[in-house]
Length: 181
View: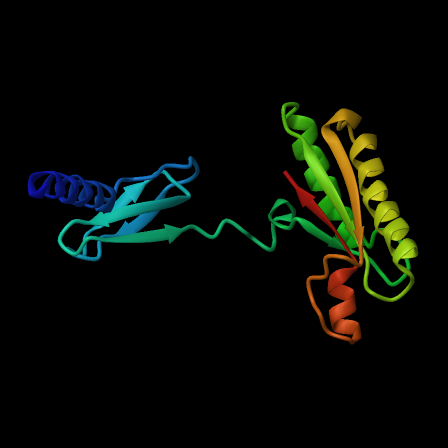
């Protein structure tokens, strides 16, 4: 009986020891410089998010590269709308056109357009407004060469707010279409 208990403890210990060992995780992406916490050396990696192991302390250090560039329209995946409107602002138009060109150049890609509204108005009205907003973005995509079967639209209306505030600042963040790849 004691021998069986010892075997179980040994197996559990080995499982914990093996799972504690860190390994590199590659997701593909651009080069990232990572500083090794134990030695202070700098190493290159070709992953956008990697885990490096510190074998002396048994810790895992995760470094994420921030790939969002606010000047690059492809780095922006949310377009905002004016109150009670499905018309795109000039800034939103620029973002949508950049994503449409990207999708037209990558025929294997697909996109989901999530339409949202602020809380003012009835639930049904806000669902319809979110749908009109998503369809407005979809029409621009299609006019710029993105196939209709690569686009899926959905409206959440007021059901998934980003900001819970009760002022214009919060409401303006909730009037949006999210572009999801």
